[in-house]
Image (cartoon, rainbow, N blue to C red):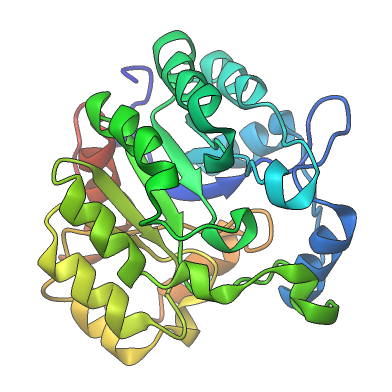
Length: 295
């Protein structure tokens, strides 16, 4: 990770998606992708390639945590290969920070895969989407994965709150929101006290629960992806300015929400001058273990 010149970066985006592989494979069924695009009113390129993502972030002098979502057990769709994402990051280490995604239903094979991705491909974290993957984060099903993530010093990033994926599709495409209540992650933080955790998104309708977990458990952070800052709940802004100022992270949810739009709206948010650079870069640099983690 020494290839990232932290001081030269304008920001570190901790939440971006790779949604299409080099051979055209998509990470989720087309119906769910389409629903997400409609939900977020996406007008640009909904499925940029890894090369396009690299160019986009390099132009903006940003680094980006990038991952796919492995929910094959629930959706029947194979994900974009984690190896492809990691190899793109290795080829562009000044821009991309590789996370992976392993479906908890893969069992022991998934645990072996996770360890291999860390040891052989340099993966720095793992994305979980409980609503799509169909599991509660505190289900023992996933504990073997958490053991590997904690042992290797990686980060576990959990989708929390509602999701645009499946929104408007009959039955929500079978996706159940209950799995993504951040209180389920509180059990994980208690059972794995040295595990670094990110609760992704303003956790509607469980924002207060997310704030409670993040203030109570030292290893739990919150990223601000998936929402324009102008829609942030007031208590989230208040905590970001005070108790959680060292634990809140910039994330966009690219490509459904671009960092350009997010940053434009963030500029109008009543965030203290001394807190703003922490959210945009310093907190993420420290959590990711990047060198020269200045503000």
